[in-house]
Structure formats: structure tokens, C-alpha cells
Length: 385
Image 1: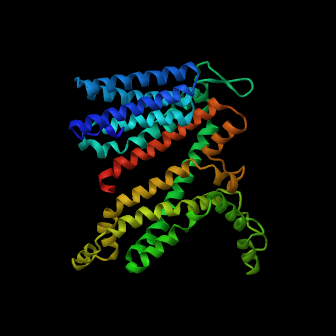
Image 2: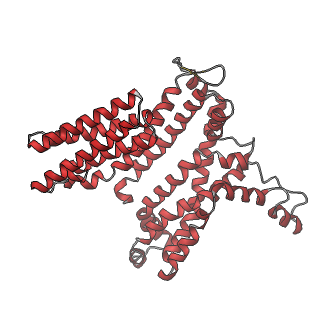
């Protein structure tokens, strides 16, 4: 595929022919290893298009660029189809060959934008396609034994409007909002102190902030359960000091869920705040103080507005995973604190009501999308960058 790069002259022609022949060879090789009709159709069509492209290139006929784009598009679409007809590995090979042709065929000026193609392709296959399946299933009926009956219905969304599930959604939003506010109140001073620390200490403080990432999130949550239980160190210390006569019910409460989410999501607030504050010009604060502003006015009029992009980025990174959390509420909240993520998990894995679980998943996704749109509307991508 390197042959499609614009070297010009005989070198470009030779490399171009070599590239398309390699594509044809790979397609024919995979074709020889497959006997199923869908696979033969996909690979045979791609091989034929490669052969036509090579012939046009050798003869010097016009329309090479159009054929390259056609081959690239066919490779991408055929690769997605081949993932189901031939298996994941072979489909990815075909799709990546098509992607390589597309990147090489277009002008170099567009290359920076084309670098996002691999990630876009990954999201298209493993996210957008999956979301499409979930969206279709959400309008179907549940089978008698937990399967799917392909009969269109709106019952799942009507059921989602039941006051019980609306209350669960509101509880999820409330817990996520409180978690975000607490992470901001804790994370902003920490990030500010890190940014104001001597340069030789900043990397050390940054590593200390990322230490929680070194352990599994589930392990950290289980450790927090040990701390909060009735015979845990907190209740033991309070009883030893004579402050309480019996253990406090710290575990399996909404406060325990919020504490667990803050404990897990706090680094995601600190890191974008630190990145913003580190680039902040603190001479602006000194100038404001020289003009008569006290510390509070300098913070409110200078520091806060200029660090707002970091605040919005951190708040988004905390709010989105918090609203859909299900491990932390399950372990720390028990049956007393149920969030929308727990209901989705229950519908998919326990009662096997996939259509209703799919409808709830789309509602949760709509909530996350709304939070993201608010972030983009208020903060703007340019200000974050």
C-alpha cells in the first residue's frame, strides 16, 4: 500500500503497482482459506477491484485516483462485513488495507486529519455499530426465555417512564452531581498547591496523584468496604475514643457510595485542573493585587475565569462515569442505593430482559451526551486546548 504514495515518475508507478498487487495477493490468500459464500464475495470483489486498479495504473489510463478511493472505501466497508463472514482478524486486515490506501491516495496536506481515521474506524465498528444494535433491540419484545422477539414495540420506553425508574435516574444524577462538586472542592486546592510547588517537586506530586491508577478499581473499592464496615478501623477508632457507643452504619448507604465515587474519580479532577493551573501566569494575580484586589477578588476575577476550562474538563470526566457507575453502588450501597447502572446490569445479566436494558442504556447514554454537550457549549474545545 506504500505504493500509492505520491513519489512521481517510474518509482511511483512501480510502487503503486506493487501496492495494489499486495492488496490483491492478501485478498486471494484469504479467499483460498475460506469456503463460505459471503467470504468469497467480499474477497473476490476486492481482488477484482485491485486487479482493475493495477491494470489502469500500468496502462497509464485516467481515473486512478477515483479507483484508489473506490478501493479504499470498498476495503473499509468490506472489512466490516468480513469481520462477520471471515472472523475478526481477517476483517481487520482487509479494513486496514483499505484505510492505508485512503490515507496514501489523498493529498499530503490532509494527512494530519487522516491520522484520526484508525480511531474513527475503531469507534465506528466497536461503538457505533454496537449502539445501533442496542437501539434496535430497545424497540423489540422480550422472548419467553430471555431472548429477543423481533416485534416492534414502545413498551420498554413506556416502562422506563415509571416513577420507580425516574426516581432511580434522579438519584443517579444527584449522586453524580454531589460527587463532581466534592471532587472539585477537594481537587482544586490540591491542583493549585501542585502548580505553585517548586518545579523539582511537581513531578513527584503528579506521580503521587496517579498512584491510585496503579491498583485495580475493584480492589480499591473492596479496601474501602473494609474501612467502612462495622468492625472497621473508623468505627473502631471512634469507639476507642469514646465518641460513640455502638458502630455507625457507614456501609451500604448513599454517603458510602458518594465517598467511594469521590475516592475513585478524584484524580480525574486533579489532573486537568493541574494542567490548566500549571500554564497559568500568576503574575496576573500580582498585578490584580497591585491594583487593590484582595485574595478573594483576585481569585474570583482572575484565577477562576482563566482556569474554568480545566474545571469544566475535570467536571465532565468525573460526572460522566459517576452517573453510570454500577460497581461502587453495588458494593458500597447494597440494596439501599440503586443507580441506573445497577438496573441496566440487572436487566442484562440477571433477568435477561435485553430490550428493556437496551432502552435504559440509551437513556443513560442520552444523559451522558447531554452532559458532554453542555461542556462543549459552555467550555468550548478551543478554550480547553
